[in-house]
Length: 75
Image (cartoon, rainbow, N blue to C red):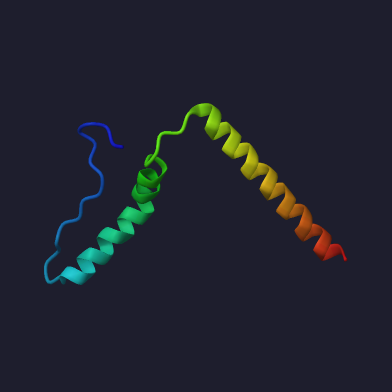
């Protein structure tokens, strides 16, 4: 996931800050840094060939949806 020595997300408690606001700040940083996205992506090992096939299928699906939406708008 992360290289050695590379930190993920750290937050420090500010003066007069509640735990809830600290937790909200931490969650916001996790989302903006893409930590969860990275963890989900690396959850399973996917070969390059399989990733290319998945990307191709996604592209075809997006193109088909775009075409259906444009046909619906024209009709």
